[in-house]
Length: 84
Image 1 (tube, rainbow, N blue to C red):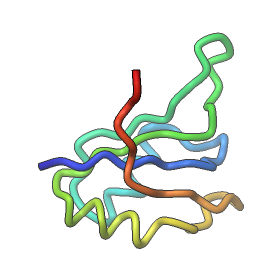
Image 2 (image 1 turned 180 degrees about the vertical axis):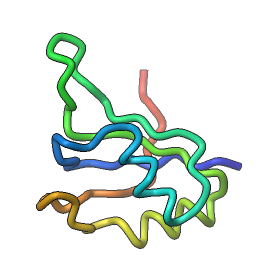
Image 3 (image 1 turned 45 degrees about the horizontal axis):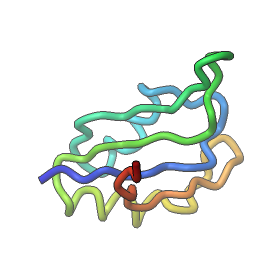
Image 4 (image 1 turned 180 degrees about the horizontal axis):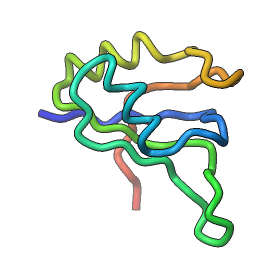
């Protein structure tokens, strides 16, 4: 069962590949997406990572919440389901 993780306060330099690499150190990443503004194409400063298992997701959240990425303290927690 995969787990979706919210990652906030991303540095502007972070892209999908770097996000995947960062979380890949803690388990198998099935997807990593930095959310970008449709108009400007710039990062909106947050993204989502999907890990292969809940255990790997838990380990990644534990290890990376508060982690310094290019001078910015990451906010990492379990993603909440989207509300319509």
